[in-house]
Image (cartoon, rainbow, N blue to C red):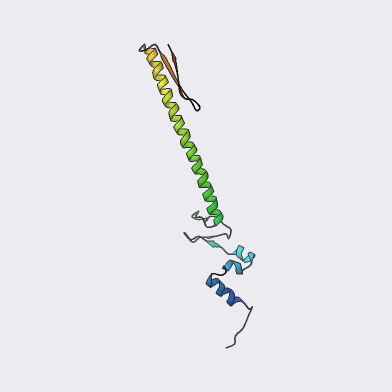
Length: 132
């Protein structure tokens, strides 16, 4: 049996990878990295090396994808909070409109002679105008 020493440091590189000192990606050229697929941990589908999400199941497979998801989620949360606030304001306006309609119906029906109109402003709050 004859020992052949091919390139010189393969054993050292493999040992460093095994001990966690290096990553395998550090030992190969960028062209080789681009040719290697990135596998999804969920469905095991092979994806491009620079893919953010799995093509098959859309699972996040990169840090960039996770950051993108986080940004989308925070934007959606802000939008949801804004819509909730708008809904509260619309409901408050609807209550005022119902009260105003009720007050006008009382006048039309002859129950009362006084018209009460309720309005809301952000600065002053609830305002009432009374007409006799």
